[in-house]
Length: 245
Ligand SMILES: *[C@@H]1O[C@H](CO)[C@@H](O)[C@H](O)[C@H]1NC(C)=O
Ligand SMILES: *[C@@H]1O[C@H](CO)[C@@H](O)[C@H](O)[C@H]1NC(C)=O
Ligand SMILES: *[C@@H]1O[C@H](CO)[C@@H](O)[C@H](O)[C@H]1NC(C)=O
Image 1 (tube, rainbow, N blue to C red):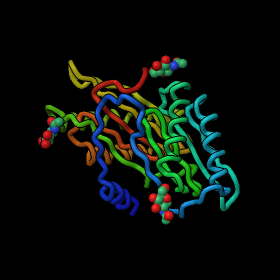
Image 2: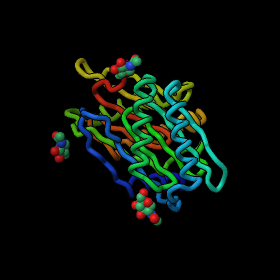
Image 3: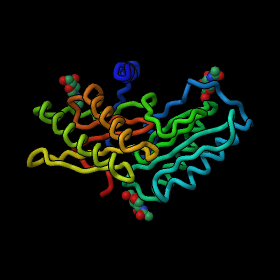
Image 4: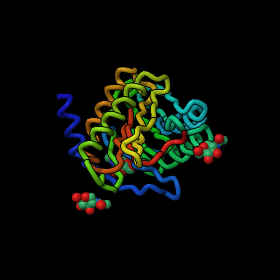
């Protein structure tokens, strides 16, 4: 049941954006405005709580790269978190969370829940308590447009090997983040990243990442790069470096 649900999510949203490697300005990768709860209306307790939550996340996230909080009382309680990519420094993290909180309000103005993703950070909020739970609803994949030029099956095997190693490291690390590279041949290195939100237990982080890794081939099979990005974890591989070392 669990497994078939996951598959249907991927096939119901066969969302493969093609992204160029260079983006001039920081644009969101994607956003999802939740449609499961009724919209809130302007100038209500929910909106006030949401404004406070976003201010809190802006202030609290940059020093550690992660923040999680809830504000208010039911039925107007709002839950939120923001996470910067594990290698991103406090000033870039700050800039990203600022952009994310302004942009998410523009793109999902009256939704009680929303997610927004950038290269450097993600931010999400909801009227539902999602803390410590693996988010399988809000996710998408992004693929490099370039095909693997030779021996795709070996390449895909190496991708799985690198990402699985990183999933284990990420799950057991305090920051739930791991990135590294491996040699493919004399001329090519493969770079990978795995990261979870820090409200997940090590066990759930591993579950989330393993699941994301298993879905990558159906999204970005035979591509030189790809990522599966979700509300709780994300994985990425490329044949060029994409994190700060
Ligand atoms: C933060 O990282 C960015 C990108 O790597 C870099 O350009 C910037 O100088 C860094 N800022 C600080 C304060 O270290
Ligand atoms: C909720 O708000 C969104 C814009 O954020 C709008 O597109 C949607 O139609 C609204 N839904 C309802 C049920 O009012
Ligand atoms: C990648 O391969 C597919 C299928 O073989 C082909 O249709 C597509 O044009 C190729 N893309 C690039 C960027 O070479």
